[in-house]
Image (cartoon, rainbow over all chains, first blue to last red; front, side, top):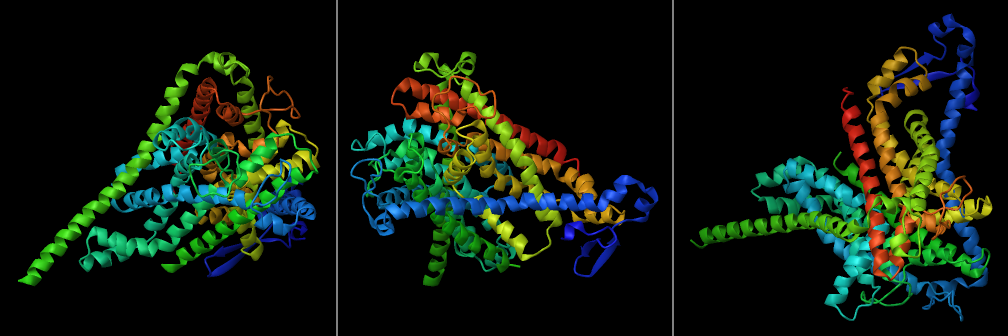
Length: 332
Length: 292
């Protein structure tokens, strides 16, 4: 192992750009002159620290492995009892009631309804704000607004849940008297507000990274500010902006507390935002709150649902990151 | 003549769409700001009459007028201290490894990709992992320790990413000078790089911990209690936390409990705002001293 090599062998490699690699001997003359126990232990000491730090970094990999193993282990046992075809295509989800049905489509539908609804709320406002902050706002205005958006981003999701129940839902019921106490619309609105700061800050970064020379060239051709922004800057940043939408929607899919409080607990295949629905995350909370004994099918449903949730968000995140990693390369 | 008119109209139309677009974008921005004010104003309106010192010093109760958040507040303090204890050394250690030690190999790329993906995993999934791993497999039961370990998993990727950012902002000239003076790699990191990046790391840590303080979903999954009339005294005690208490009160139909929830939220927000203020203070006070 590299960590346990002796002092003479080990050397620090320092890269100076690509020009040269300087090799420094591990024990310098100063250390040799000092002698002493600590100095003679130095190579081991360095190695131990190196190894400890390596372990710290490896934990993140272990966590991922842990998530995958735990979710798969319990889900596979779940699929011994329930056929995977019923799980993926069934249109009724009643694992806690007799007769039991294990079709995840209603939960999926609820999740997508909330994610789509929150995107409808957040995307236009978020994109408009990002464009304004990046292209139009004075530095002073930005300095005032950006910390406010940070506050908005820092508000915990349970607080948004409270606001959905106490503030947004009564307004919706006033406008649409047919709406239930718990309805998907109030969840969509608060989740939309939640993901707004994320869309704004990511999109703004992307817009700012569009080189000034592009703007300058467009202005030189006689375009006005509107044309420069809409026909040059935004198209140039489009792939990154879409990646930011994907990340925000994936966050909305994984959002739990606000949705649990606002959207209700009735899994339903509906696209009507005024009805009460249930999302995947809210179902997990519902089961966790009860006393479902470990090892039963009901207990294992949360792992199967969790696996579905994990795969959905993971796919969206990976796609978004792939797009983002390519954005940087384009103008270099 | 007609061409002259064309130029005139396009110019005018251009000016109008320009104005319209600017106004729409400005309105979008103002909507965000307005939302923040409406939310906070609404919370203050709902909760201010219920907020008192007694509220902080009482245990939860079936009767709204007698209910308080003592156990929830102490539960949160326990959770956040333990989470900090576990996640800060691990997170900063991982960041130091990735930035200062790891060779630019595929392994490092893999860890890096893995961490940014972990940061996007929904917190409820960590809750399920905590339930299977800490509560069941390690038999820690529904204890403060299980809760804190689960929260550690939630914030770890965020702390690592923030610390990496801070370490990256230390210029290479500092490292090279230290090496040139004969310092070993760890001496360079410990005496030069870490002190220089400390304000950035602290800011990241505080912000991550304030995120952990507001998390409710993973705690519900690992079995935080709805009704806890005592303050946790050891690691294996059952617990509740501020966001959980707020969740329970909000989920009840009675109006009075909603007022209690609003008061609880105000306490939570006050704590969060002070943590953020500390972060901003640290960034300004110590961040500016270092000039490269």
